[in-house]
Figure 1 (cartoon, each protein chain N blue to C red):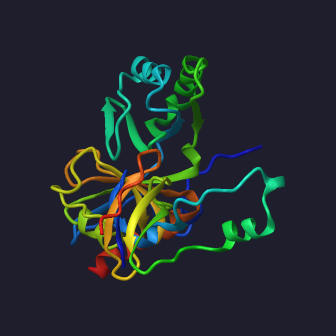
Figure 2: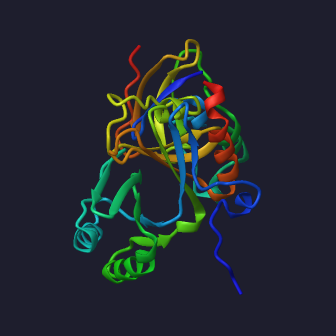
Length: 193
Length: 93
């Protein structure tokens, strides 16, 4: 019998990984386990794809480095031909099924990659500074506005970083196998700066 | 460290990229008709100029797209970049 495990389950037996909260510094890190991810691959010119996205979640296909947020759904630009649909985990397979049906006449593909990545919400006043110690992006508000998304390396591992537009909050994904490394790196971060 | 302006993601650090060699590099063909020396020329011989050169780079850790960079091999100045499919950027002397 297969058993579903959250990325940090292994680690949480050793110590608390519910929330990392540094009261002095104000940094707050929370593993996010109630969101699903669907990877959409296709051409941005594909009318069927644009129509399916529009009808299913009401979103437009976002251009480079941007996102389109519609209620509980967010569509994130990944590459010129790939987008990530972030949605409530419980709806993942239903939405995937509906999109597969809508995309049948098109070459576009849709894949559930929810369990490939580990997701973290990094918030609090120092969130931006902590992340900037680990990557070379300028995350200050004038350079990385709300709604921006970027794929880069944070703490030496491949990561997706998104600013959903909630004060000071960044949502980051790393490959699932790097979840513990990323968590430990964040836990050490107040000492670093 | 180079800062390379990816046409899709904006300026990023060099370790995010992979170098892909000079362009244009045209594969000779058809294979049966190509002499050994022409293959050797295609596989191994490059201009390797000191100065401005057009080369391919891959944004491995970002958008995973190949694109064209005009780079000065002596000074590391990056003069222009362009996405694949767009016209090759001109080299300004």
